[in-house]
Image (cartoon, rainbow, N blue to C red; front, side):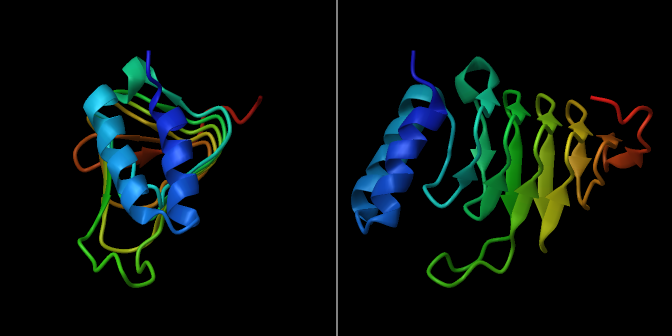
Length: 151
């Protein structure tokens, strides 16, 4: 079956090498096969996993996703609408080893960071940065302190 990060990698290469029309077409193809909206401007780290082939995942165009991140279905990572032809005013960074629960929403109008190994609970609505090793749950999300920082 199709994995969204494989098609995204080709789309990203095309977009970064001036083939933006082809990159956009591949983004739509990716959405057709996986229901995962990943613009070519999104940076995806190594070993990122999209559960259930990224079904319903929508990612804002100026997002950096670190290594070993687990993204469950129907996650929305979004910023405010800006002119995509200008430099990004908002950058969303998902740290290494973070886990985003099913239906989680990360919504911001300014730069935001989800820390290393942070956990975002299912259906949480995150409006602020989450420190490393912490858990965010609820609507709007409240941040729970880390219980254990081992491993």
